[in-house]
Structure formats: C-alpha cells, structure tokens
Image (cartoon, rainbow, N blue to C red; front, side, top):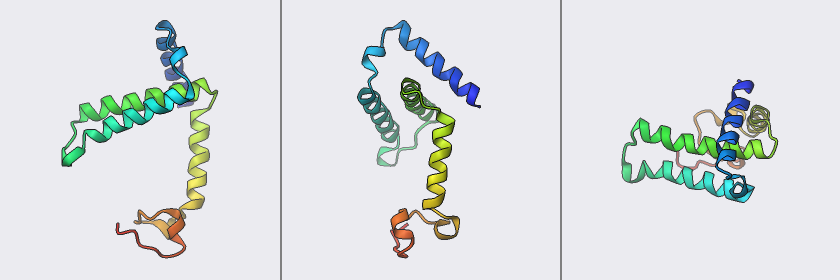
Length: 116
C-alpha cells in the first residue's frame, strides 16, 4: 500500500510539474483547494439530493489529489500520519465509551448526549 501511495504522489507531482503548477501549490493554496473540493462533494448532497456514484468519485478524487499533493510537498508519509492519527483517536474515543455515539470526545466522560 505504501508503495502505491508513493506512486500516486509521484504521478501527481509529474502531472503538476509538466504544467508548471508547483508555483501555485503552497500549503495555503492546497488547503484551500482541499476545502473547496470537500464543499463540492457536500454540494452533491445539498437539499437531500442523492449524489451519483460518479459525482462522489469525481469530487473525492479531487480531495485525494490535493491531499496527496500536500503530503508529498511536505515530505509526509501518508500511511504513517494516518496511523498516528488513528492511534490518537483511539485514545480519545475508547470503544467502551463511544460505540454507537456521535458525541465529541470531550462529552464522552460527562455523559452528554448530543442528540444523535
């Protein structure tokens, strides 16, 4: 899997290099692009619309492309940072306290119900 992620990051980097887009890919700009693509994904569901799988694939691919690009430009190992974050989240959201709940971790110890 790690090799495949590095391959796709390299493919994205080559795609961008051929177009001389590195100058437009600062962390700020990539973060904005990710947010915009996520908003486009959300828009597909606006007003209870059911998004087509093609629309979901298109927008999700854009999110991944920008996220992988940001990771590559910052020398981050995607598999490592995702696993590290999962470990942090496992500590914040212990199974015995959060199973079946959408409560934020700060509410788990207080027994606060968030309506979900």
